[in-house]
Image (cartoon, rainbow, N blue to C red; front, side, top):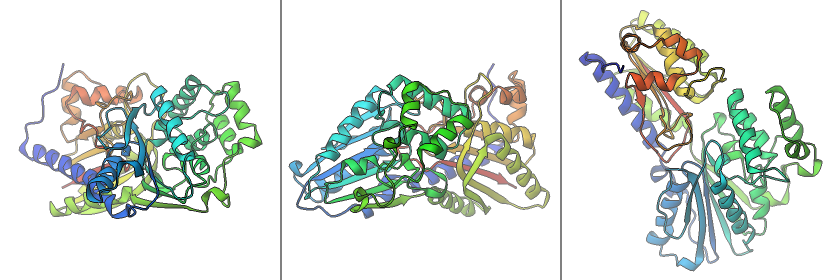
Length: 437
């Protein structure tokens, strides 16, 4: 049974406003808006362009147009490869486009990464390497080290995701099982005249060593850190991974390594950029923006309960506010359902608000997908209004039982409130907005 859509004009208007605010947040961080001003002028040598992540295709397309169309750089002076999540590719003449698995890596990612490493290693003293990074690059650039197999790397990734580990912990382990992450791409390109990385951040605190697992920057995490994370999270490792994490020769390059002497790194879009765009849109609609932070972490359902309390307090005070937050929440999976952090947040928010009048919210990942099974059609999040629980129960759903079972996707699909923008081809993490009043 599918629940009917809300009919109250005020609720429908607020839902439309929430969707419009999300659209503005996403647009603020798209490469078309943020990349061109940072692209370096053409140089006499070769320009080797390497892109990875959910914005890898769109960044490559912008760079291709910049050099080939605007500057007329001949084809023999540009070589490149970009790899993005399946469904996130974009035509970029002169730059080979590959679509690969995310969040679990696949064989397409392995072949693309081999090619990227080969291109980086081919750079000579007259060549510049331009690295275009965004969130998702950790899964798209996959080069298992030692005797580790793809299947083993996939199993470790799945276990880390299910454990509720934050992204910095997941990437600390990934970097020590890889031939490209944790500064190793910079080592491969060490003979280049220059390495310039332009990155769209999707991580709390915009740490370059965490964005796409920091392939061109020194790695502050250690083998001991990776071992401790796996032990603390209960991750069972195959012998091949154990050998890598116990081998001192497999430590990632650190600050002071000569490979970084000619490497420059710039972040060109941050989560806060999207949230500030959301705040401006809410303010134009007559709401007082209240920024709760762009770097929030923690269990999605716990953060949702706290945000519901803030919303109810604001309502009791008669305030007309927009509570805005970002960051990267996590879900410790204990049930058998499907979902993601934003959908779980939205379901927990609906339960905590319990149909309170005058409050509606949206929670979505700016990349267009939230959890899911790696398909471009995966939902990005969920939308909540005062009729959410009533419509859900009318459709035979038990909201609390579904939260317990981590079954938020089915919950919002049944009531028609999944947020599904499709591939946005950017990624600055979560955007959550609660309108009060």
